[in-house]
Image (cartoon, rainbow, N blue to C red; front, side, top):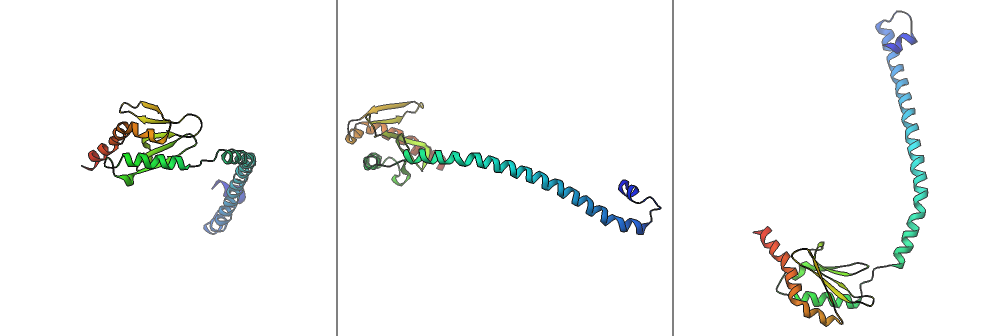
Length: 172
């Protein structure tokens, strides 16, 4: 109504109102669209500037990733199968798998990294196996060869039993 008074100062009849209403609506829509486009353009320009600065960053990350590529060695695969053979009869073997990282090979249950039975560090100078305890601490055992893994059979089985007991509780 305020806009109509500023545009048309004579007597306002129904036909005059009907004549000016679409014009005013169209003008307001145009104004709002222009303001929205300005905001969008400014946001896009900000994103474009941000993208330009972040484009160089992934190249550096890619170079680092290529230098430190995760490779699962034959020794790690052999260690995985040794641990899996130790676990035969303790836990359903198809549930046991591994996750290789830059630092260690983790033997896990149900493909969940939080359900780890043991971790093996087999590259570099020190070879060892990490086995979690019930109290959330971790025991570290140095090994000279993969056959030394069998020395810690009881600890590995005890670690795996945490998950087989848990499954019995949840499925009962």
